[in-house]
Amino acid sequence: MLLQRPPVSFPHGPVAFVLSVVKAQVPRWFRRRVRRAVLLAVRPGLRGDAVQCPVCDATASGFFRGRCPSCGAVARHRVAALFLQDELRIAETGGRVLHFAPEPALGPMISELPSVDYVPGDLVPDRGQKRVDAMAIDLPRPFDGIITSHVLEHVPDDAKAMSEMFRVLRPGGWAMVMVPAWDALNETYETPAVRSLWQRHVHYGQIDHVRVYASRDVVTRLRAAGFDVEERHYAAELPPDRIDRFGLDTDDAIYLARKP
Image (cartoon, rainbow, N blue to C red):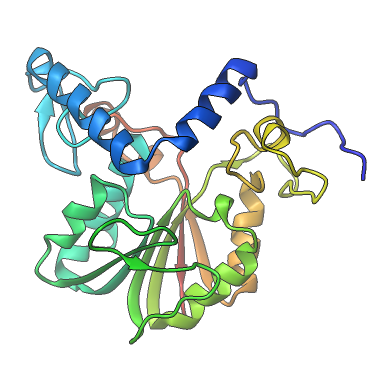
């Protein structure tokens, strides 16, 4: 099968590809330890109150390369935290919540809420996490909520994963879904012709991605699984002073999927 020209042009060349391959060989726990050490080193120079992280509530004079110098949260983690807090009111509603591939910053924020029965899961779990295959969720008891941020673009069969999320949710339950998606695409781009790591790097933007989502397709695919779906650009809904203070990206989309 011949490869067509990719519909999205990613600004990543051969050097970025080599670095990605090298990074993939480094254990995740080690990468996170190095990141924590870097943040610890720069934190004293960023003391201040110009910005605030809604994940850990720390303030600073600025974010370090987009990250909170205290917990490491990036913009999409911060908008997810605000949405969970202000829109889903997770501290009040609580319930049993499954978190796919939990982010090191967002996970502790949710797990510390006394009203939440928090279940972190990953295909390759860290300590304290459940082993969860998004395409075959084998966990007891249904869930009231599911959080999946930048996970589905890694999953070979995302339709199966979405159906599994629908299956394990209680009626009335919610799934907060975030994926990198492009408004300019008419349809999601994925092809079996893309096989090698280099081809994934060029066509999908990362060596571990298996598709490039079109924004409208995310809604369509979630609805096909049975969900009622609302696409929210939540950061863009906030006042400019909150966007600046929390360091948000107004392009980040949150797909709120509810099980009828």
